[in-house]
Structure formats: structure tokens, C-alpha cells
Length: 240
Image 1 (cartoon, helix red, strand yellow):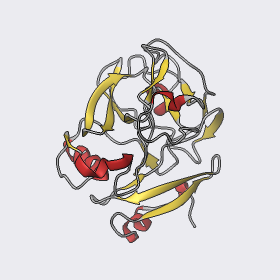
Image 2: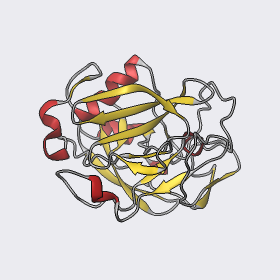
Image 3: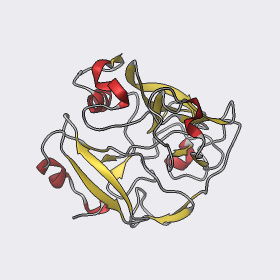
């Protein structure tokens, strides 16, 4: 089977709509499910999990050199002057109602780490780089066509910011996008909302200090929320 880095658009198109395939990221041998979504794009059905290591342009979503993904830490300000990563602790199920499946291995990145930069101070246009595997990238944010694309991962509605409905029963949707992974909230310096909602970074900044995120919870899906670059969110890459 191909790796994440070897998976092509032709291979994606050969998958039936809503079909999935398991691929390995050769940078750390982590396995991910990828899904051929209803709009024709292939998306990671599992969150990116890579940290505490150097990655190279050969296998990653930037054009030259290497990038050091930090090890796990905590931060309490809107820190986008440097990359930050937080890995969920074993106690993160304490505030979860309903499904209490472990959230071990869940990794949150600030936007600076997500776009593979040393700092994003002054960055107001999309850098078009990320820590996704080579051939994959962060989704766009605040874009109507991508909004529809991303929303369709979680249901059949062709719009966005719609009521999620039955596809979220038991915290699982029809394509197997399981669990509400929560986030790292710098304002309370804590893991937050595990079991209640998920937030994923796009590659699109909104201002020097903010960027677009793609969110879902038990009530709706919306790829246009604007949050501080210093928040810690998950990453779901989309095939270029």
C-alpha cells in the first residue's frame, strides 16, 4: 500500500465516495484513515499526531529544509511568536459526559506550529505550508466552496453552519469521524471541551493574531470561526 506521502489524486478518485483507506505517515510510522468525501476530496479521518521531532521537506508540506515540531508543553497566552504543541494527558476524560473513551495521543498545535513556522507575528496571508505529510495540506478557511466540502464530511447538507442532527448520535457520524476531541485553551491554561466539540486549524489567517478554524459539536458544523493563533487545535489534512 502507498504511504501518506505516495497517495495521489488518482488513488483518491479510485476510492468510492465515502470509502476509506488506511495509510502510514513515513515520518513516524503513524497510521491514519483517509476518506474520499462526497465533494471528491480525500481527507484524513483521524487527527494528525506528530511531535517532538524534526521533519523534512522531503516528506512534509513545505518546500525546503527541516522543521522542528516541539515536544508537549503548556502555555497561557496567545502565543504565536513560536510553535507550541500539547499532548492530551490521561486524565482528560474527567469533564466528559456520555462517551468516555480515552483521548490518549490527541495532539493540539498552535497555528504557528500547524503552518510549520518559527513565528507568525505579522503573517496575514496564507503561508501555504504545514506540518501535514507531503502531498497533503491544511484546508482553507472562510471559503464557501471549502466550507461546503468540509461540512459534507459530517453530513449530507450542502451548506454550512447547519444543525448537525442524527449523524452525531453517540458521538459518531456515518463516516466514522469519532469523538469530540476538544482543544487546548490558553486563556484557562488547560485542556478544554473534551467530549463536547472539536476544532481544527485551517491554513488561512484572518489577521496578525487570528486564524480561521473548522469546528463541529453536537449542534452544528462551521468552518468559518475565527480564533487566536495561540489556541491549541487539532489538524486534519486534505489531499492537495
